[in-house]
Amino acid sequence: IMAALRTIVFLLACVSCAWSSLGGEQDRCQLLEERLNEMTKDNDERLNEMTSYIDSLTKDKVVLDERLNKMTKDKVDLDERLNKMTKDKIVLDERLNEMTRRLDSQDTQVAQCGSRQTMYDDQGPITYDHLTTNVATDHSILDTVTGTYRVQTTGQFVITFSAFVWMDTDQQAVIHLYLDGTQLDDTWYNSYYGGNNYAWDQGSLTVILDLTAGQEIQLRADTNTA
Image 1 (tube, rainbow, N blue to C red):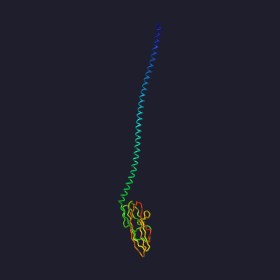
Image 2 (tube, helix red, strand yellow):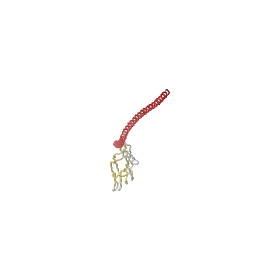
Image 3 (cartoon, rainbow, N blue to C red):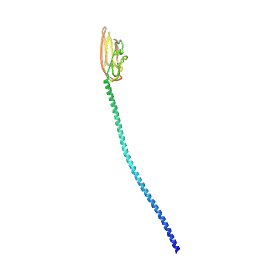
Image 4 (cartoon, rainbow, N blue to C red):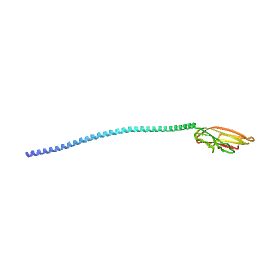
């Protein structure tokens, strides 16, 4: 009987040990499951935070894109305004230059007078022995060698020329003013004598011309048999 009791106790002890071992594994599994749940919860929270942050960044990007588009449109508008202002400035500069030229023209004084004693049977450009008047604040000059006056200041010019002609029968003197090599028909001067012996003739012609800087004027004897 004692031997049987010992065997039963031993079996109970073995069963108790086995049960104890099984209970320890369950505790560890439960602990691991709890840790896994905590990690999952923590990861879900972090994922939610990242998702919220990304959503916030996306909204900020939308706002920034809208601002950038507005700034781009504003830049286009400013560029158009700048181009318009640049064109307006060019127009204003041209007007200012024109007004300056007109003021300079009003302030400019030019008085040139050439004299020639005789011109026998000569045709072509009328040259001069000397200048009787030589005033030009713009430094222009009547060239006595070529008989040409080159305009330095744009404006209106009063031009007068006179001639004293001594003629025999059927002799004649015809003078024109030339502008840049072109004869001006309205500046015709003519002295002619068809009688006997000799005659004297004296005349003068005055014109007002709008001349531009760089143009040239010159008197020419187209006919001169006197």
